[in-house]
Image (cartoon, rainbow, N blue to C red; front, side, top):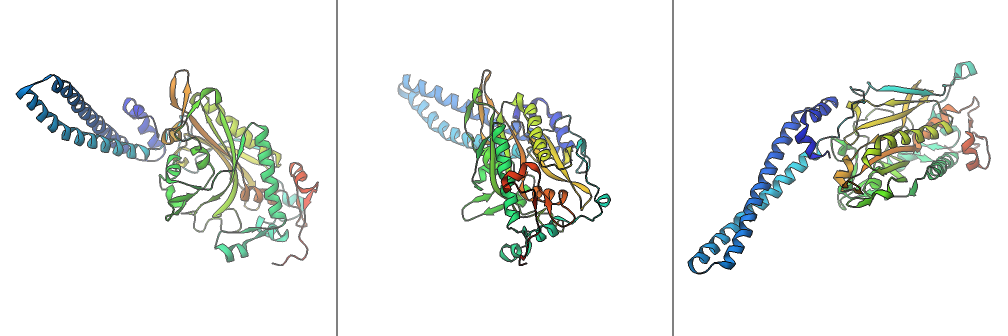
Length: 429
């Protein structure tokens, strides 16, 4: 959540941010009213509580009829204090709940508009000209079947639509990508973590994944009141919930590997072929806790790590600055890396990195002990390798006319030095 003081001191900035996201600025007026009610309730309670304490001192000194009158007032006041305290707590809870519905403030540099209004910051690498090479590229599913790497039919049989098996060389490819991603992140100073894939509601809510309709996209286990994470960002953010971190231990950089589960609500009919948009996939995610004043520089660093990883896989890609109307609840700014998908003849998202400033930290109670006092830290996240999409890009961009796939140099050590994935002989489909 944002700093409540900002709501009071600069409500127009909050209104402008909401408008940039395409949302009604009327929420600001409702919040200001709720805040006034909260502060009035607190003042009323504190006034009664002060009177109650003062009476206690007077009773100790009084005698006779005066003491009886003071005791009667004390009894009466006791009930009023309890009512005022309850009203104060309720007003505070109402305000907090409304404040949590308010998204993070969008940075001024973020391009304004909706999903298609992003700004391309750079393009790296050149897409292959398959026509010049004399063959029509196969899509990732056809390649996956030739290689004995992807089995959608049995995935649907076992688990339903949008599930899959990675088999043989497909499983090896994921493990190679995993090991490469973790090795690189460790070199960059990240602490490897394998986090739980089930989290409490407070963790989901604290990271903003139960707000703005995003709750429709998550899997909930009602019997246990636990959620399956859609990204390990949730567990990595909540790792330090309700803690105070010493400034000299920041930044704290973690890289997590976990399964991710998404209902893909609202994506009916989109990317139904293959493993581009699925209900479960594995992902390597970078996460940082740092001082707020260091967050923007750290955001650029996370983007640099993503670019390094994609470049190592020899994939042509571009970097976009995501428009304000396409940001999630927690993000103040987000960069996406989109790799070229030959069979669709367009760029598709494979990584993203978001600066959530102190928005998540306020919700999760994560603070730092700095020279100027104790205050919320900033949190940032960045995808290093979403396995299914990275597998798609490796297969399609490095395919050869005979159905084999050239392995990028950085992956070959994980395949015993092999230079390519080859069509599987005698694989039963």
